Amino acid sequence: MTPPPFGEDAIRSLATEESFARGRRYFRSGAVSELMRRGDIVVEGSEFAPYDVTVRLREGGVTETRCSCPYDWGGACKHVVAVLLKFVAKPAEVVERLPLADMLRDLDRVALAALLLKRAESDPGLVLWLEAELAVAAPDGSLAGSRRTAVDPEPI
Image 1 (cartoon, rainbow, N blue to C red):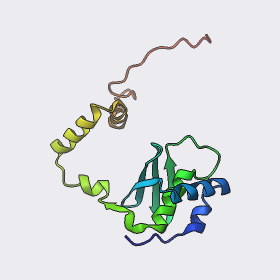
Image 2: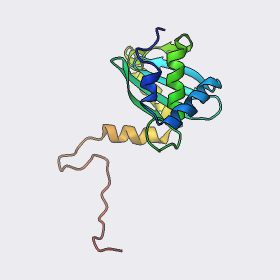
Image 3: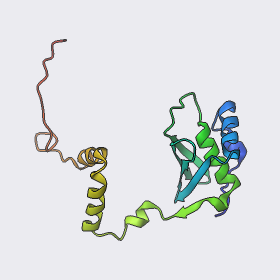
């Protein structure tokens, strides 16, 4: 894989000075593992902490970052910084995978439903999400299959 069209300065601009320094130490310690790219999305799993990092790339730059860690002090966390530093410094270690849309494109309806049902068995959140996404408005404006309960408007 060719290196991304941005470098350390662009990564530094996404984080506080402290987060950048911690992310660089994290990267240099070899903590970033399983770096994978699917189209415009880079994801990582960490060897030392079970945090999921996702970076979205568009037009040569970073457009969105997410990490499952509790960091909330402004800018990118050390995990995002470490992933981006590895992405820039070691592009040959990034595993290229097909984008999800390409993987699903040729599946027929039955196969796609089977995949969703298999995942839904272990992920109740998926069922709730699908239910909300597939909800159809009834003629009276309510959601089909939804339940309405009257609530007493008086304060408790």
